[in-house]
Length: 466
Image (cartoon, rainbow, N blue to C red; front, side, top):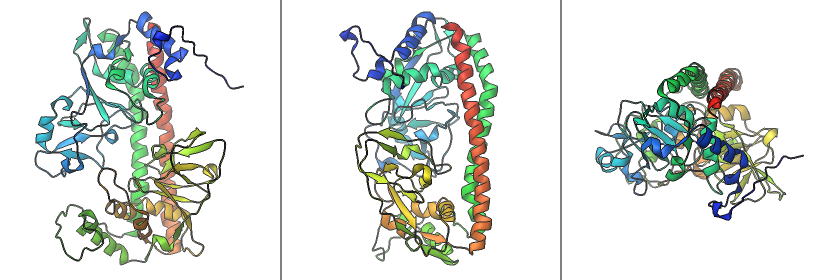
């Protein structure tokens, strides 16, 4: 029998939210225990400021500058926060000119600030300990802690661990984890989280008790990312088709540009990359795959995969949601479909569907392809090569649009696919990538175990206060 929580509201004056998740008795009991037994303090009382980007409503795509721009300032995004809660660099880092950074004063990031995702995945929080200046984009909030509260020194590392712990995540989920659209948090909700604040020496003891396990988790995560990247890049080593230097930024307009006039599509880099591939055996995608015509079947419920459910590192499905009502047009997946995302395909949103996900639905951004009968390649080879720099760079330079850039289905069809001899495809490419993916998956499993150990250990260390 399915277990059900019974939510009882004794006073209608308490009804400040419509979501019944806000009145989960277990979470309310936890909050009451933190507040009364542990003397918990609201986060806003521990903070000098809790804010979001002061450019939140005015940032335009034309405000971005290249990474070689003089005095450019990094604009932090959710992608700059790793799953471990660390600030990381990515291939998609964005920058703004210094004058905008100076204009957006309240969201200038300082050492010791906590950076929190206010949309999407809850609990994505990083401690900023970097030596460069930065600002925030619209999806991030900033928590600037006070030096002390009630005579107790506030240790940022402890607050960082706490906000990624059971005690804070349950409160975050109560506020914004079950919204009808994308999950998210307001600044008031972030400030309303109750924090258990032990004395300074105890905060430091808790950090020391966690750090060894956390470092092990981070080590496994770094290995997972390294093997994932190798699984994409090893194809370049095997096929030995050179990828041009992207630092060439010279662009000369020509009246010959009839199809598109945007700079990336007509860049020297893309022209050279395509030229290098054409010097070897190759074919267009539309001669190897055809768009699948999967029929929609009405049902009492649907298993739905959104873009957020895709692990870009290994191009795998992380999870899915079971829904009764569909709120938008969906793509139907069938076994042995190769899905390429119009928005994110260049990052790794490409999936090979196996029997487990046969009949699932997904974002309309995902285009399903199936192997043509006469194709001289295997699905597995195509899956791996589509994740390689040879294809991801073609997609990146073929994106169009302003704020949410996409690659069209038409541009997907003309992607150039390197085609070495069948023996090289299977024995060298497929086997090499398989092995690297196995190592990546193993490291990811170890990381998740250590991450759970950190979560459980922190929970146990604070139980004595409740």
